[in-house]
Picture 1 (spheres, rainbow, N blue to C red):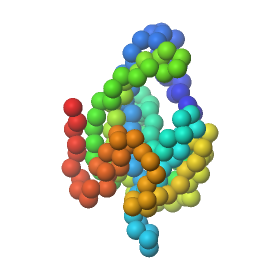
Picture 2 (tube, rainbow, N blue to C red):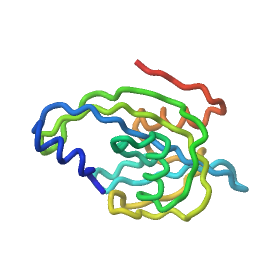
Picture 3 (cartoon, rainbow, N blue to C red):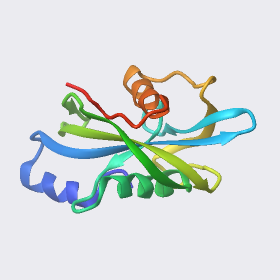
Picture 4 (cartoon, helix red, strand yellow):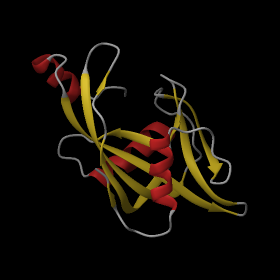
Length: 159
């Protein structure tokens, strides 16, 4: 589901004005005989590899949103282990002129079951990567993954 219905309704009222939205990043990890793996999805819109991300619905608990997004986007069941990073992202403008700014809450999730595939059409691929063999990522996505993998439950509150 590319744009949640509540966002579409808000857009009817505010047009292209800046919209503040809470978002979640689910860095899903599992241990294998070869080492630690991270689940990444390849976005259909721009081809970028990222952890599972999404918008938190009104009234939804953030960790629950991450679990929901993991199931919707990659068909995996995962449980939250720790909030590891909080950051207000820079404002952005979409191709249609809509402006948004996201508060990203990054969680480390533990994989429970399911083999990933691009389940909802938002992504072209979904697969596991060894942490030593990650594909090219933006600096921000690398930082989100790094916060989840560092081995403690400290939360980074970024400016």
